[in-house]
Amino acid sequence: MLEMILHYEIMQRAVLAGMIIGVIAPLIGVFLVVRRLSLIADALSHVTLSGVAAGLLLQKYFSFFQSVNPIYVGMAFSMIGSFFVEQLRRLYRSYQELAIPVILSGGIGLGVVLISAANGFNVDVAGYLFGSILAVGKSEIWSIAAAGMVVAAVVFFFYKELFALSFDEESAALSGIPRRWINGLFIVSVALVITASIRVVGILLVSGLITLPVAASLQIAKSFRQALWLSVLFAQIAVLSGLAAAFYLDWASGGTIILVSVAILLSVLAIKEGSRRIRRFFANRPAHKEG
Image (cartoon, rainbow, N blue to C red; front, side):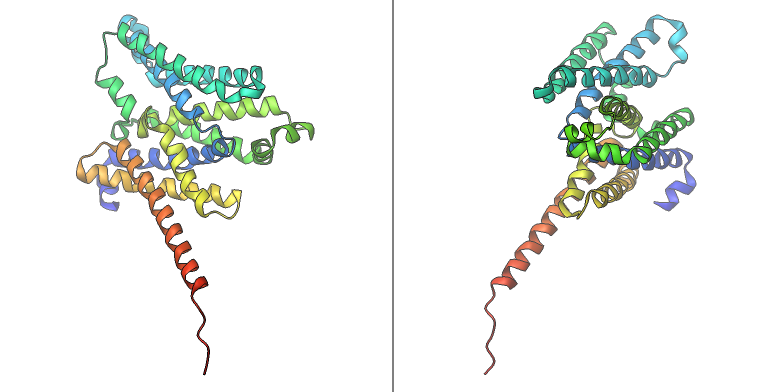
């Protein structure tokens, strides 16, 4: 692993981008999972797909947009979609999960229309769908780093507010926390994470990197803060191991990272179940009486 990092600049950028995403994706994912809104990542990722398709379409017909990275258009779409999600959650206070299928279906529909208008898929769209971390350029590294700093700052400075809103939103609002403003800031952070993660795991797999490390950490964590740190640790293991495997085996990096994340989750579940059975075995074992 160290050898490939030292000898290949492309791997240096890939590892740096992957490690940044490996921090901010589960960092946001913990709050999403606790809020039972993890599928919002899927919804916004498909809105991002529409933005990327729109960016590619603009590049095709307008020379001005040739120098504009489609990811930036996808970021704009994702942020707009995040505000729609929050607005729908307020309108359907008793059915907040309804915002997810509405945005998800709208994002898919718009994406399909835009892609068909550009005469179907091409290699660029496929790269955005499934990830192409080895193609991360210097400008994209700066974009990922900027998104990482913004998301990390939001979590650091508003940790107590996000924690309170995640577990009991109504009580948090009654205690004086500006629910609407904090929720808006949080959902924009989700959009930033999704956009920044596109090159690492792709639009179709980004929700896996946000939720799978969190799912593994929640099985063994003793507290919310411990779950947060464990989820970041599991994400880093998945990213670095996935990149190494993808490099040496010539596999798709995004899919490999997600498969490693799934393997980590299954391992944690197996170890926890095994330890539970061992404890139960010794607990039910009759004590030997001394003669």
